[in-house]
Length: 194
Image (cartoon, rainbow, N blue to C red; front, side, top):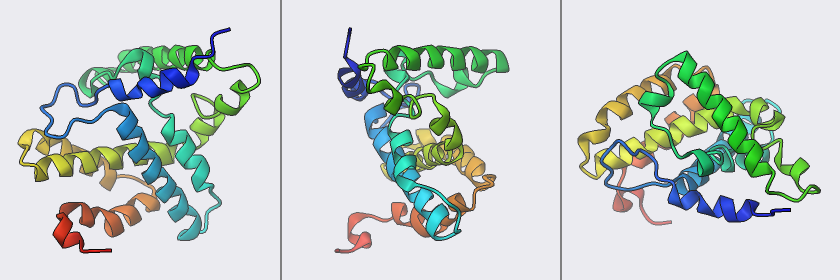
């Protein structure tokens, strides 16, 4: 049996994001997944500690770490194609499902049940709202960072991503934007010393 799961996971660093955009600060899906996990953990903590809704932030972070793992096998399909039509979205969901199944098949049988819920399973579905919001917040932060680096290529993406976030029904998203996004506009000196 092939037990290559973690070797595949380590290859996330070779899959670039934002492939149709000129990037001042290149980003791969491993870096992106880390940031999404950090934000998903924060959103889960906000949900639990600020809004009093039962939530496990650690579970949110774990799902977020693996949320783009199918892209190890599929690559990162650019947004204009991925969301072009319902037919393409449906077909791509099927491709992602097959990629997740193939990836999970590289685990020993005794470990697979621990990872199935995180990679295309019921835990991922249950926490989809938090992970999707964390993914959008990560994209918004990337746009802010590119603008601050003098790259106007991301201005439209920043505007459209912010509009999506503004429409989010999740109070955790509004809380995160209000309390944490302004700091991303600051430089290191403005952030101050710890």
